[in-house]
Length: 87
Image 1: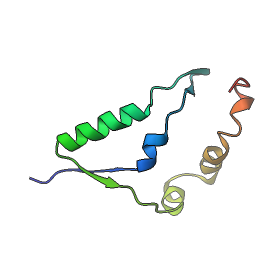
Image 2 (image 1 turned 90 degrees about the vertical axis):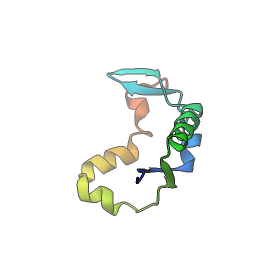
Image 3 (image 1 turned 90 degrees about the horizontal axis):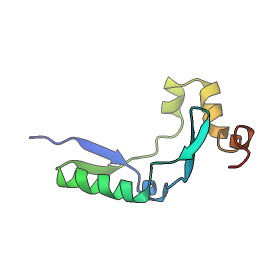
Image 4 (image 1 turned 60 degrees about the vertical axis):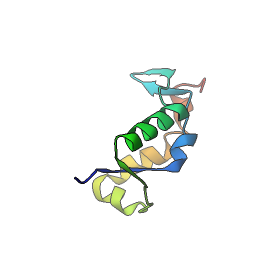
């Protein structure tokens, strides 16, 4: 039986934001480093093959998203104070 390969980034363990913007409000963020560890361990125990995701540059993103959307994503973090000045 073949198992599904799961792609991830080791940098995920460092992604632990405190808040995020949802439906017009800043709220507590559910993502934690512990959640990444729990999910990775569960996937491994279930027999899934974990592989590090390769960087393919921006071309695959440009193939499916507009330049305006990619520009929005590139600048969203620095523009967050326009929506919530307390962040």
